[in-house]
Image (cartoon, rainbow, N blue to C red; front, side, top):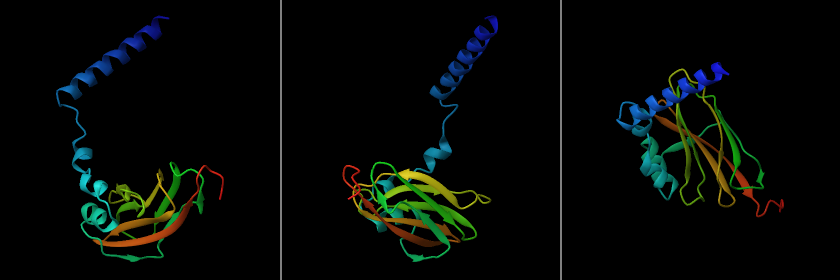
Length: 156
């Protein structure tokens, strides 16, 4: 019983110290906050979103990008998407849905030795293409797939 109390006390003190440090600004996610491309996620069209997030909207299709998404999404609120880039020097992977009100759904900046692979779930308001954009060597490459979003999950 005494061991559980000590563990609880240590955890409480550690959480309290971390909370105080965060509240006075000693622990802030500066790198995360600095990397937030607010204008890109607020953009209303694909070109504006890409320009704000990646600095350009000029892209070419590439067979080295594998985009995995369902043909039919029965629930547009949770559409699983996986992007694998076979392009060397992949710097970032972005996922866009052109028919969403805000087309940019995800933007991943990758480290130098990071594998070009992301897997996430996105939200789709209606049937649309899903576009994966890979930035490598200062150029943009893309792949797309149409995903049909059904209403009510009835498959039709």
